[in-house]
Amino acid sequence: MLQFYLLLLLMLTIALIIPFISKNSLKESIIMSGLIGIFSLSLYTYLGAYQPLKSWVTEGKTHYELLAQYQQLGGTEGIIARIHEKLKVNSHDTKGWLILSKLYAARGDDKAAREALEKAEGSSSNSRKTSLRGA
Image 1 (cartoon, helix red, strand yellow):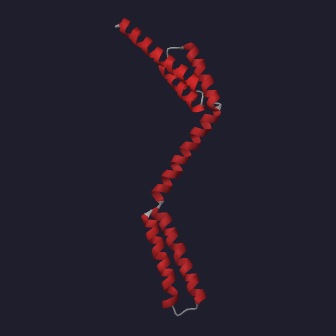
Image 2 (tube, rainbow, N blue to C red):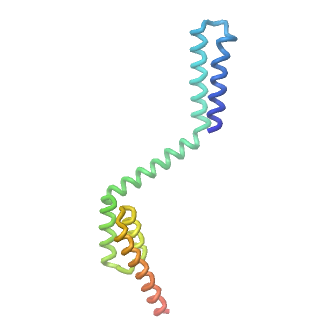
Image 3 (cartoon, rainbow, N blue to C red):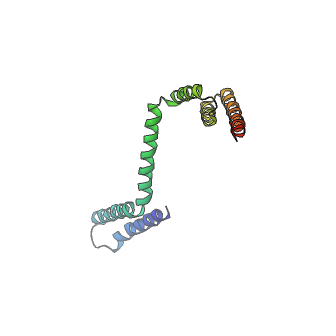
């Protein structure tokens, strides 16, 4: 960002000096100053801001891909319904209960989030007991 301000300062300095050192008319000096400004900003955009622009475009693309997947799943409600279906099959899925808890919390349903978190803790302790028995 500092590069941008330095370039802008240089451009303004040149724009203010040209009319005083030029033997051309004021109109030609203003046009020349404008062209130098456009050239400077174009050069900065091409060279100075290439990496940030590239990362913004790449990350923005990823964001919109994730947003499309989210919408295909039916938003928060659709995802909650799918997780409930999976938890009917395997009620000891700790990850499923944790994700469900986070979704409820994001939706603002604190009571349901707490219940899901308690079930996650319960399924976690059950899976530890099962693994200890098998050992």
